[in-house]
Amino acid sequence: MARFLFVVPPLVGHVNPAAGVAAELAARGHEVAWAGHEELLWQLAGPAALVFSCGLPAGAPARPAELKGPAALRFLWEDFLVPLADAMAPGVAAAIDAFAPHVVVADQQALAGGLLADARGLPWVTSATTSAELVDPLAGMPKVADWVGSLLRELRSRIAGGRGSADPRFSPHGVLAFTTRELLGAATLPPRVRLVGPALGERPSTTDFPWEWLDPLRQTVLVSLGTANTEAGGRFLATAAEAFAGLDARAVLVDPGEVLGPVPPNVLVLPRVPQLALLSRVDAVLCHAGHNTVCEALWHGLPLVVAPIRDDQPIVAAQVVTAGAGVRLRFGRADAGRVAAAVGEVLTEPAYRRAAETVAASFHAAGGSAAAAGHLEQLALESLAHLQP
Image (cartoon, rainbow, N blue to C red; front, side):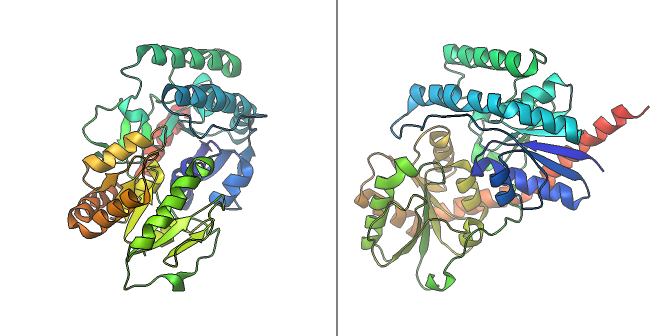
């Protein structure tokens, strides 16, 4: 039996894949602990999870809804990733001291996990919950890459005493990437990347759903912009609701900020939904091209309409279109007519569903949580063997 410490940021889309892998490891008899935001972890990993609490940045600025391009990248690093690492570092260090893990699994956006594991000489694996970093988005921007490198060096000096040398986003011990070639494409990958497909473990139910509202004789589309786009998404959600007024299909529209007014009778608006359970009952998904939502939809063989907002979403949206599994919209320019046309296209043109089912088959074959757990077990065995006298 080995001990695994998962270090994750306070982001639902980053915790859920790790929770699937952690549950698989626990089912195999291993000990699992978490370092991160305790309330979110108890919600997503279960109330019995062993959690070492980590701090959050004090007074973190809200991200402007219109922020894109280089300004968005600067905000991501200077106002989110680096402050988060500084805030999490004491909790991560305490978790390593108290739990004494054989392997650390550090999310790409929880930089403190990789930096502290590397500084202490612990085996560690990167959890890459989006494929955007795998295709090196900074390859054509050497000055930006140098700037990110300087931020990481300063961060390493502050929280790890300057010890270690590995990039915390790409562990030399391995990178778990929750995708497959059928979605990722032919991009050259960094060394030791394991394409394990989505890790969809049992997910604790956090909300009820009026299942009787679904009509088996009418197609239904799930509309969601995720949990981090409430401020940016109000107009788009209203436009999507308007679009369904002219469609025979139904829509389940997720409105976490509860910003919408009256909607057509064929649109059901809820602040949250049991997404995994619902995906098995719908016919397509309209979303922001968040990696988790895209992969969960494709796992079920569902075609997509994607309207990326920022960050990795344009890259993921391009992967969906290249795979033939969906249609892309311009988030800022999508009116009701364009949304209705795109939704109608993926619901009526069989090629999109066939492509989605091809990706789904690759996801299932990749192994998901079981494959990821197998890679981690092997690393733990090597670590334990090294510790034997």
